Length: 266
Image (cartoon, rainbow, N blue to C red):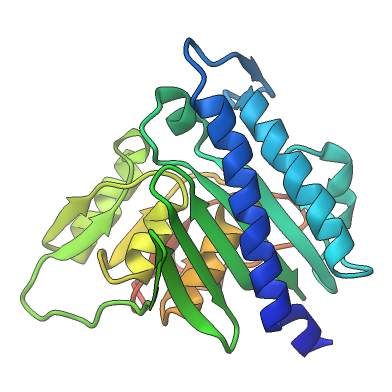
């Protein structure tokens, strides 16, 4: 069963699916005029592109592995399949909808395979940038950029150099500033959506702290990529970030090339 879940045929098929979802997003992205936006509540925008990508992924993943359900941000009924044991697909069809609306290219399609509460296979595709990151348990990690495939690994520690921190200015709250002050000298690297994890995975940054709420589908795919590249993702107490929790929420995390101090005392 494990080889079935993580085999080459599966990774190739899902890679094609996330690209197809990206193409559906770009069809909307390329239209002239203002993108029509509705709201799912809690300051969460929804566009036609979110739903188009969801339909592509949900249809393809449902057929791929018998008995492995799909949990999607755009299908509330699917949340019943979020469980701490067993396997399920966890998808965010358009991560970074605000970036999509702003047309800055910093948005992604996220697909993760979760097994027994941990993301074991992840796909992060940035359609505008034509960057596809894939990583999985026992598979390593790679980036396919403009047709060229390269293995990726996290950076080694650089003694005496400032820590390269990837973070969003909009999420740079007082708690994050206090944590960074504890880490010492640092410089900011800008990226949007799940690309923050991927910049750490490919060695372009060292650390991505997010001290604030996210959903599991925001993090699972990129967590799998980063961990496959040799990095770590832990919660505020220093424990490995998990999926299928009692609520679909992460209170915060630190994604990094090497273990970082916990934000809160265990």
